[in-house]
Length: 326
Length: 282
Ligand SMILES: [Zn+2]
Image 1 (cartoon, rainbow over the protein chains, first blue to last red):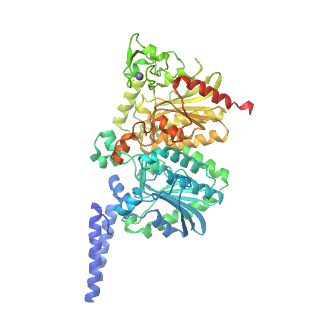
Image 2 (cartoon, each protein chain N blue to C red):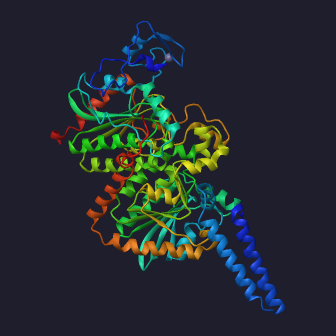
Image 3 (tube, each protein chain N blue to C red):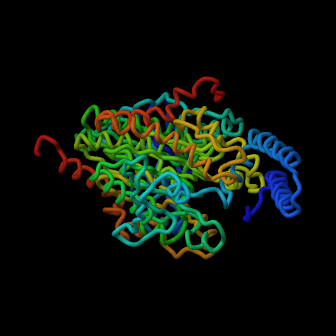
């Protein structure tokens, strides 16, 4: 771990450092410290369990935004082979905040899409912190139509604070781009699987989440607006973001309870940033189970089920019980 | 103070939606040119300032009155009340206040009526109700209106307005974007006409979903239309936005709106579009 260390991660990181040092010491001095090391490893395990099984919503936000959390390309490299990255919307430009291409998953060609944040300030500036412009969403549409033409499923990885709120984005029609991206995905005649792998922020995230299933990693979040903005707008106090995260129902477990996501994908103990390979394996298990099932469905059935799924989502009849409006 | 000037001529709007006495002699000051005029006079010009052309925001009731043939409107789902999914006391209070201020149960009024005798399903978003933010039930009412239009093979006109998402309803609010667009796909597959009229303000999730997907997109003059609010953009780029940025005319110039239609011509334009899409002639 080289990037920013989360406060609640610190005891884990420190202990892991200590184990590393002890191993080196044992090797150099040729003494056997196996018992001590095993003991410390047990303590790390217990710490991780204790911390990561009890993360508060705000802590999940921090984990979801962790600079070392694997991004879409990290997962593509682990889940797929033969990746060819494609660029540009054929209308205006190429958006470094939203990547896409073709790859092979479980032997089957797939189209992959997703927002990408940077690991450090330099890369974040280059990738605009994962906040896409209209050209990103228009490239996504182009690649989705291409996927349809070649009958290959689409895997979309979501990780963005939101679409970029800037002048160029408005001038080039960010509203139009997001709306059409949603529409394109809803009508696409191939299976579409969306995985929220980090921060699912607002309409910019939703644009890639209109497929046959919405999957979310255990410590990822999905929200209508950032907790900071929620606190700032509703309570006029952005310092209450921690509290806002609690009431907004943005964690994977909350979203599952609200029937807004189809499945929560477990993460290795300590979160995806502690073990990217383990995180990728768990995503693979879910995709390998769901993709062939969706791919086997006749198109008519696929689209009908997709329509029904979104018709049910947010149907107020589900939430009427216990409603305390007078 | 605009809510004081609601008309009571239309009668078919659900319950007492938007009905209130308009005392004679009340006056309104134009926010743009400061011209002061009697409310009744302003009503005659469809709430457009005669001097500077400023379009005052309309209530759902006024929109119905100015657009549909008299007495033709029937509301859908007028009794559908907002939900408070996370049982927030703050939100319950805001809803109660919004209902008090607007006389509406939600920010959306949907229903069926006629324009020059041509039947049409209309959806109107009323900014008086929590700035027409997109809640679960607002989305549900829009979705049901779209579905009825599809079932009845009728054209659809949505008058959009929205300050953004109904944050108090969390991701449920966000998901209304997908739900409404999904319903529009079904309406569109039947070859039916969908016209959006973007009114002040149309921002956030509404602008990035059904508002942007009309076969034909009209906008009222000077309406604020954009995804991000101007203040959010100014904070992000740390500079002031130029005059006219994100206004209807700006969107027309950038290719995202077909026509900017002054309110006095709006009914005639809608009527002609409906006529051009009459099904028996094709
Ligand atoms: Zn004026």
